[in-house]
Length: 567
Image 1 (cartoon, one colour):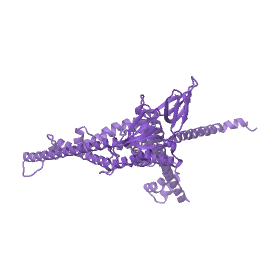
Image 2: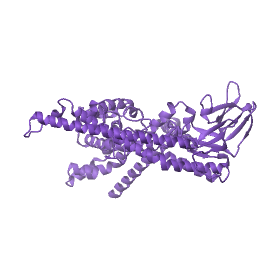
Image 3: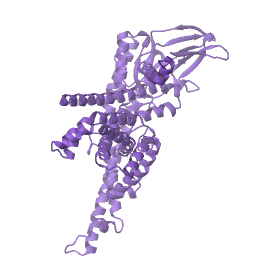
Image 4: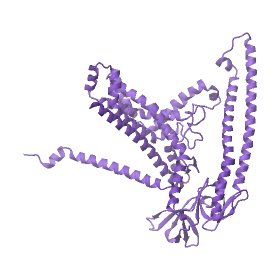
C-alpha cells in the first residue's frame, strides 16, 4: 500500500519548507517596508512645502506648513499639526503646534508668504513689509521683493569679500599660535632638571659639563623668550582681526528686512542671518526642483548648523567613509591571514579548537564591550605609550596627542569587532574547495604556498569577499564603540586635509550613525530634528548599499574569472 498523502507530506518536511519560505518573505517585506518609510520621509524633506494661512474662529491667524492630522481616541476630536516657525517670537520656543480642526475657519495659500532659512532660530514665516539698509548700497529699482533679493546678493558679496578672508586668516593664525604654544611647552619641558641630560645626553667636547649646560640653558631661555614674543605678537594681531571682523559683522547686521507674521507682529530680520529665502506658494515646478537640488548639494557639501538639525553633513559623510576604509585596511588582511592559517596550516588539536570557538564567540559579543576594550587598550594603553615615547612634553602637560580618542583608535576597535566575521568566512571558503584540487596542484610539483596563492585563494575569493561585505556593512552602522573612542558631535577639522602631514589619525571625527543618535535622542526639539533623522538615515543606507554593491560587483567578477579559468 502507498503511504497516506498526509504522512508523506509531513515525512518529506514540506511544512518546514513552507515555513522557511514564509519567514523569508516576512523578512523581505519588513525590509522593503523599512526602506520605503525611510525613502518616503527622507527624500521629500527638502521639497518646498506650501505655506498655509490659517484663520481661526477666535480671530487669530497662523502661518505655517501643514504636517499631519490626528484624531484623539478618547474624545474623537481631530487636531492638525502645523510647523509655524518663528521660534524666537513664540513664548514656548517651539516650531510645531497642534490646533483643533473645528477651530479652523478657513485655510488659504498666499503667494507672497516668505520662508526664511536662517543661521539660527530655525525658519521664519512671514510677509515682507519693508527694507532698512543703512550700510548697504542697493539698487532702488524694482518692486520690494526684487530689492530684497538684490540686497541678499549684496550681503553675500560683502561677506565673501570682507569677512570670509578675515576668517581664513584667523584660522591660520590660530594654527600658528597653537604650534608656538606646543613649541613653548616642549621648551619648558626640556628645561626641567635632569631632562636635558637624560634625553639628549651631554656633549663631549673641550668645554666642561657645567659650561655646556650653561650654554644650553642660555640658548633655551633665548628661544623661549623669542617664542613668547612671537606668540604675544600673533595674539595681538588675532585680537585686531577679531575686532575688525566683529565690526564688519555688526555693520552687515544693521541691514535688515522687516517681516510681518500672520498675527501682524513685525520682526526685523538681519539679512546676514538669512541663508536662503523663497516663496513656496508662488514657485513653479521647475523652481521647486531647482530648490530641491540646491538643498541636496548643501547636504552633501556644507557643514551642519543649528545644532546639527540644519545645513549639510559633509564632515559626517567624510568621517563615515574614512572610518570604514581604515577599518578595512586594518581588518581585512588580518582576518584573511588568520583564516588561512586556521584552515590550511594549523593542525587540528585542542588549542586550535579553542581558538575556533573563541573566534565564533567573539562574533557575538556586544559592540559596547569592544568599545570599552578599545578605550582601555588602544586609547589609554597604546596611545598613552606613544605619547610617553614621542610626545613626553604633551603627556606631562596633560595635552595628549594619541592618548585620547581619535579616528585611528575607532577604526582599530571596529576592526577587532569585524575581524571574526572575515576569519570565519575565509576558513569556510577554503574548506569548501575539494581536496582533489590541492592534491592535483601538489602532483604537478607546486609547493604548499604556491598552491595557496595561485589556486586556493583565487577559488576562495568570492567567499572571502562575502565576509568582507558583511564586516563592512556592520562596521558602517555601529555607534556604541565610537562614542567612547573618538566620535564627536561637531568636528572642526577633518582627519584628512591639505596641512602636513595631510592624514591626521589622532583627530576626532563625525559619523552618520552618531549623528542620527545625537539629533534623534539628544535634541531638545525632537519635532524639528525628525526630518534630518530621516535624511541622515537615508544617506547612511545609501553609503552602505553603495559600498556593498561595489564589493558584490567585485565578488561576481572574481567568480566569473575563476569559472573561465576552469573551462
